[in-house]
Image (cartoon, rainbow, N blue to C red):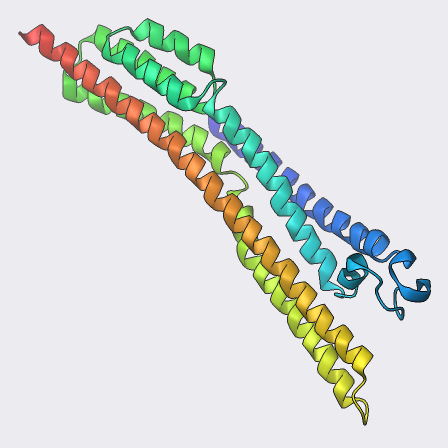
Length: 272
């Protein structure tokens, strides 16, 4: 039943991500066509033949690849905002380091009920995983497992809970990482397209057509800049969120180790 629910949620999440991707490309096209291609941005009000009067007009001259690059840039922004809220929610209501310090203090002091209450108050993926491990700690304590059996049971519980929480944290990270390469490749495609247009202008006339040559070179440079900007932003976002996810995972593992050590100490005191 849980697998069916998880698979259904994954399919729904993939559909939402696909809709966001299409929407970003569509919005990028609207920006390129109606904002950058506005007649006010060109001499004589002609976007096709008029000389650009400002930066928006220059970007419009970048050609057909510009809407796609703008769409990818919007994807990085949208998915980064979405990941920020999801990962922030996973960390819980209060600062994670303060929560971890308080919970570990309670666990080491044997105040398990107080630690569970702190998890209920904190909420989020980290608190949920720690709470599950604490509940399992109480179960094995009642059943009287030895320290090694308890270690395996508690670690297994943490691994199971983490395996359920991690897909939610890592969702859409693949899209952001893909945009690192796609942004560069899209910019390169636009660069090649612009250079083809520039050299085509040289080949089609006995004397160089400076306007056509300048347009082609401008298209190449604009697409290069947009592609690089997309890749840079995607790299920063991916590394930032990966670091945040690693911190959450480390916090769960650290709490699990503390719980296991506390149980070993408890079992050791009974043998004395």
